[in-house]
Structure formats: structure tokens, C-alpha cells
Amino acid sequence: LSPLQALALTTFAYTAQTQVVPVANELRGYTQPKMDAVAAVAVTLCAGLYCAVGHAGYETFGDGVDGDLLESYRASVAVTFARIAISVVVAFSYPLMAQPLATSALSLAQNQRYSLRVAQLATDEPRFVKRLVTSVNLVLSFAIAVSVDDLGVVLSVLGATCSTAIAYVIPAFAYLRVFSSGEPPGSGGAASSLHGGSLLTRSSGEASSSHHGGTPPPDADDDASSYHSAGG
Image 1: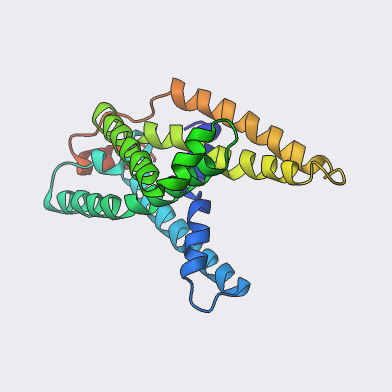
Image 2: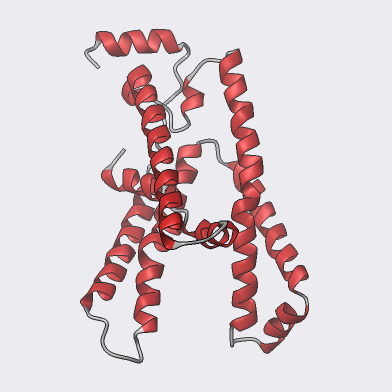
């Protein structure tokens, strides 16, 4: 992986801003220290799991590890169970991503000023708009799932585009917009926005031009042995 590809994947892995507001609303006895503790625990657990799985894959296969680690292992009961477990996780986590998307799209439709008809429709029929956005999202997700073979490519593209925009570009742009009518916000917001835009452009180019992921080894034990015998 190039540094920009790694940055895209890491940004995608830790982009959970869309869940902050729902979690805060559901948190019993909300306080800022309690919310900070929830975020710290979540990020720490994710980091531990990512490091453990990534290290295990690299120790086993070296540079030949596939972008989807399970693709590198030969078929077995344990691998099948892991695939089923991931399918269950994805199935139940998908609504957590779809719900903020539909809510945000509804809010944008209601408050935009380009089409009064769209704003009126979103105000009068919020459920219809949410169902329409969710349906379109499902169709697009299914189309991507059946047309892309390498999960690493999908994660790289998402990290390079959506996650980079959410993590770097949009917060800086929103900051600049909030302070646009008052005192100058300084150069920090503009610099952060330009930096995020540069990362988005360069990471997108890296992700689209490079389809990372080697050919899955036929035997995990043989591959691991050859890797360690070569000094890996």
C-alpha cells in the first residue's frame, strides 16, 4: 500500500461522525465527559481489533495478504463461520449508516432554496422522502456489491472520497461558513479545507488507479512457511 492508500483506509476506519449525534441522544444522563469516554473506548477497541487482525494477516501472508483477509485463507469451517459472522455484522450495521443518510437528505431537501416544490414535498411527506433515499441507497449498494470483487478497492475509494471529505473538508468548510459574516476566522480553517481537498484528490487518484489485493494463496500454511523462510 502506498501512504495515500493507507491514509484512505485509516480515515475510513475511524470515520464515525455520523453516529455521534444519535449516540449522544440515546446516552442516558448525557454529559460531555461521558460522551468523551464513550468515544475514547470505541476508538480504542476498534484500534485494538484492527491492529490484531492486521498484524495476524501480515505475519501469516506477508506482502501477499489480500485486501479482504478472509480471501487469503483456504476454505475451512473457521473461515466459513467468520464469513457468516461478518455478513451478520454488515446486515445489522447497514441500518445504522442508512438512517443518518436518510435523515440528512430529508433535512437538506427541506431547507434547500433551489426548488420550492422539493422543499414542500419533503415537509409534507417526510416518510416518503426517507423511503426514497433509502431505496436508492439500497439499489446502489447492491449494484456495487455484485460488480466489485475486491473489498479493499471499495474501502479505499470510500476512504479517499466520502471519509476524507467528512473528516477534513466539510468541518473546515462549515467553520468558514459559520464565521464568514463575522470576524475573520484566521488561516486555520482555510488551510485545513485546502489540505483536505488535496488529500481527497490525491487519495482518490491512488485508489482508482491501483487495485490492491494479491492472488489468494492456495494454502495458508504453505504461504506462511515460505514467507517466514524468506526472512519475513
